[in-house]
Amino acid sequence: MHIGTHIEKIFYEQGRKISWFADNLHCDRRNIYKIFKRESIDTALLTRISKLLQHNFFQDLSETLNESENK
Image (cartoon, rainbow, N blue to C red; front, side, top):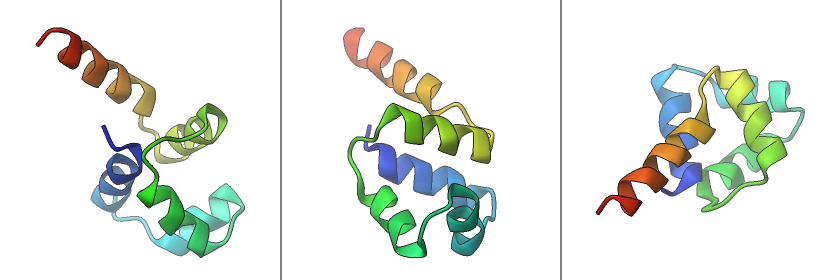
């Protein structure tokens, strides 16, 4: 799973604005676009994003891992 793309998908599904996301993550808007391009992400940052978007990205990653093991 490309985590940045997945975060971006959930983010836009929620109808959020980049400025809202950047303000709540306490970073610059440009950093949000960089997050969307990341293939991997620090767990502390992913925790903050999960809480902010109220979405468990760790569970999504776990399910993807389990699916690939079952193939």
